[in-house]
Structure formats: C-alpha cells, structure tokens
Image (cartoon, rainbow, N blue to C red; front, top):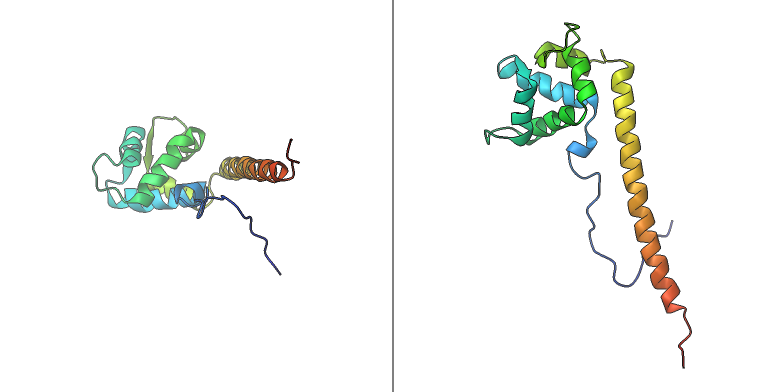
Length: 150
C-alpha cells in the first residue's frame, strides 16, 4: 500500500488530539486509578479533594491521578453516580470502594453513556481538525491552478 503525503508548507509532527493521557480516560479507568490512590491515601475523598488532586495543589499528585480526578470533575453526573453507589444521598463524599465498584462496571448505562459521550466528543473534535486541514490544503491547491492574470 502506498502512502501519499502532502507537499508544501505543512506543519511537521502535529500533536495528536489523542496524545494526552486524560483524553484516553474512561469511567472505569478513572475509577480504577482513583480507587487505588484513595485506598492508600485516606480511604475516601470529598469533591474538594478531587479538585485538589486535579490541580495537584500538593505538588505530589501522580499525573494519572490528577487526570482521573479531572475526568470526574468534568463528568459531575458520573461522580454523583459513583458516590451514591453505597448511599442514595449525594453528599460529595466517595470511598475507595465506590470507585472500585464503578471500575468493575457497577454504573451500568450511566458509565457507558459517559464513555460514549467522550468518544463522540473526540470524534467531533477530530472531524473538525480534519475538515480544517483539508480545507487549507484544497485552498492551496486551488490557488496553484489559477491562471496568471495579465
């Protein structure tokens, strides 16, 4: 299979929108990371603790834990579903066991819907990037086909 590469002024080594760890997280992955971390660091977290982990306010938060906390904060409905697995009253406190249950699939369709939303969001973002690049390339190609005006 041959590959066609564009010529001209194309940026080299463009970063992929899927390159960061956080872009690849899912409900179950984030839950597993947080379950392991929280179990070894106090056993439970408040939502404000997640904010501190996401922002790495201590300077000692592992990057994957920070990314998992950011994921939970950007999906508040998922965090609420997780923290209410053992108690139906949402209070903002979640134990490591809740995260472990979520990692094992306890959220059912709530987790699946969040994962699907993330996939669609990434697909839309990629589609927009592809459209932008192809439009730029087409514009450049069309410009080279113009007849000189005398």
